Image (cartoon, rainbow over all chains, first blue to last red; front, side, top):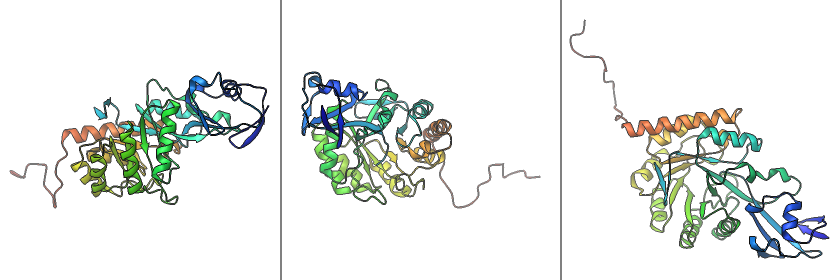
Length: 67
Length: 252
């Protein structure tokens, strides 16, 4: 399925948000995810189905101190 | 003990996690620093660099995580970032940064006060990055901020404590913890801030960008410890001229 993840087009064989996180090898505990500008709660990761051309935004914690 | 909101910390050194050469070095430096609180930034995941996921290198159970609102140029942007951090599960502590000027990264006092008030009312424990302005520090205290973080000099500049006289007044007047943040370049800068009576310091670049971040983290740990012991022991007053410490009578 073709998806737009953080403005980048990717083709992945996945169905749900949880599978997307697993495919990208991200730390599920520390993410903020929006699908088509709608925030997905952690408990919905496993059940939220993705569809062709969905726009997904993923935010994570990164190293940072001051600004 | 350092007390912020309802939490106590034995370490007075807070570490920023940016600019480390690797997650492994960062992890060792955090350990060597003895810190109990680290700051993190929130960013969109870089799909080309999945290894940049540093959340696996931080012990979230042992350390207080302080997400910052870096990148926010307005109060509204800072509030949005703070809420994203809370939704992510990073807790309700936030290091509030509203910095519209990219050259000096100086904080916007009006935007900071506005965001601090809204976030405090929304249940956040707000640690506010601010210029060393004693009046602003009191205004932030009045609206429910948990700690004030006056800058020593511009972020990452390693210029040391250039705002010392104002920081001294903030420490004298404030009922909140005062955390000297930004611009500390050397362990002695950190020690000096703590000797003055600052409750804590936040250091990132001076450690992360040094040749040996693990050794530098240890140096900062020792300097902060020495500074605090000096402060608690009671520094003597400075004088205008010499006072002999050898006996002045019965000179040979």
